[in-house]
Amino acid sequence: MAYFIATYCFVLNNLLPFKHYLVLADKLYSLGARPPVVCAVCHLGKKTAIRLYKTIHQRSPRQGMLPYDPFWTVRSSVHNCHASIFLGLIHDFSQQQQQQSQVPCNAEILITAYDLYCRIVTTNPNPGKREANAPHAILLDINRAWQLFGQLTAGVMSLMHCAQCQARYVVVNNMPKPFQQCPICAVWADKSGRRRWMTVKPRKNTKNQDH
Image (cartoon, rainbow, N blue to C red):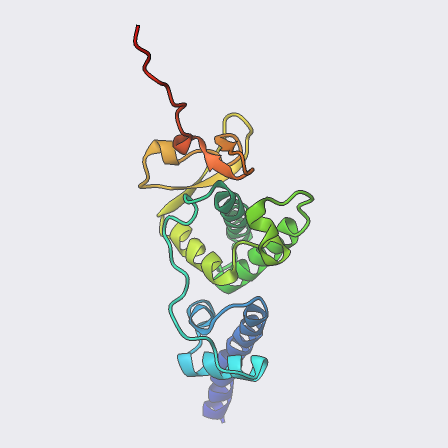
């Protein structure tokens, strides 16, 4: 009898986390996640993740590599602003779980931070050109968001505070200091209105005059 009770408790203890991760996977898929991301953060097997995707979307998942660009946040100040909002939320929610002595759950942190990020950027009353061309002004899709989450966790990126505007922004740690600037203060707008980094501001052309 004791054997059957122990077996039942073992199965129940394993089923409850699995059911919880299935719920999280469903939420991730609703946010646009692809199976490799769900496999990584929900501890599901590849076949289970793909089968769940097909059940939810009634089609096979898209093939190909996940978005990966370690310098995505440096290529545009607007990219950096969006990444800074998202990774700032990741940092805050991670700290909150640690303070509450909870075992960090990357799936829950990713879902909560990304969902709030989307709510924040969609209320932008004056989106830039890049944002205006994106659905609901969301430049950061959840698959790239997961990649940035991994870079922050691995120490490839970190968050800094601007001494001028007090904004919190993300930097790539191995980039030179001129490329670790505030995406709000250290930018300028060209004639088309596009925001550019101060480090790539062109110098004024000067013509040599003969005297």
